[in-house]
Image 1 (cartoon, helix red, strand yellow):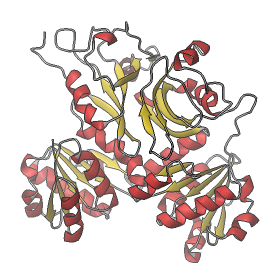
Image 2 (cartoon, helix red, strand yellow; image 1 turned 60 degrees about the horizontal axis):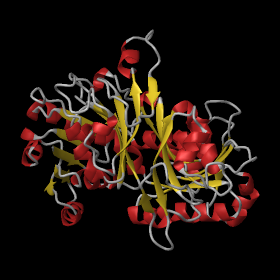
Image 3 (spheres, one colour; image 1 turned 45 degrees about the vertical axis):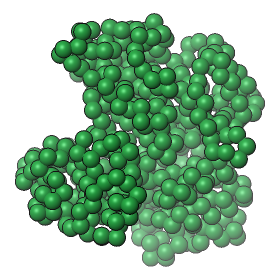
Image 4 (cartoon, rainbow, N blue to C red; image 1 turned 180 degrees about the vertical axis):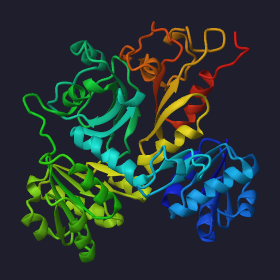
Length: 482
């Protein structure tokens, strides 16, 4: 696929890094030649220096035969105009714009063909807010990703000694929870000082303390599964009530505003170093949100604000070092869970497995929204995992037994690579979306004898992105396949 990326900043860099590894033809446009040289040195792509709103620059980047434009420059206006020019001048089939402003609804006429001609808007801040919201909803989880319109979820959790599932083999766990629709698709285990190593799951695989366990399940069953992995017997799950947000920027303000919509549900504090920004936050956020002015690495300040009673400490500033240090300090002082926003991938890798419970990259949080457009076949959702190494993919089976390699065939007949794991199938989703009175979609945990039907939504876990093409090829419909 031929892709043009406008903007070589943090988001553009991460998008280019992810897409170029999948043998796409990538061209990046930016006004900063130094950034482009760095990208060209590190990755197999082409850089074009210039303003992406100018037709001549887009033409130089190859817009006439481009399949996908991703406009993720710093300014909303630049991204919107670039999409419009790409549509009018070059008829680029798919156009995505990064838009930070909340004034554009996805179905707004301003984004339609007669407006800015944007097929999809993405907002990293909104993606982060949704991501963190799921971690608040499921306190035991390290991450939660949704499929099939939210009816199924992929979650990961750290296995804790004393939890009911820890010390069992996967087959024994399934037998102990026969009515729970779930499948453990991957385990990442730390060996001595080595990085976490992928452990393929089958019925004989033992769940050990410290394992990072990935499970696919029906949404309604997720709390029960996470508790079995993470909560020791006899211990109740403590809901997240007290939250401290460090950083009153776009992400911190948006999250505080969203969490305060349900009065009395959360006790919220926002800690911000900039005095003027504190004044602005106090004027815009609801009165029940306490805005504090101070240094998040001030041990005395954290102690005075009862850090030991905080259920979730969120460091969301633009400074990676401040986020890391404030999280480490908060954890040492007794905060139950800490999350650090980290832009540099090397920092995120270093923090994984330390006292920081969750190291979150802004670009990784929204990357899946872009990847679905860069996939072949009827891909509905993509989620980048393990800092871009692994991937979870939702793809729809189309056609019939004559035109498809999967429809009408048992799971054991599918020619999938050994590492690829079919997690679950959601059946009847298209009917439910077309007819509100239709039967509720069914979440199926596939066995070897399960037959794939047309319009099934199949969710895969892939420990390496290089396997994506094999899955896409298998699900491709062909008029001549027999």
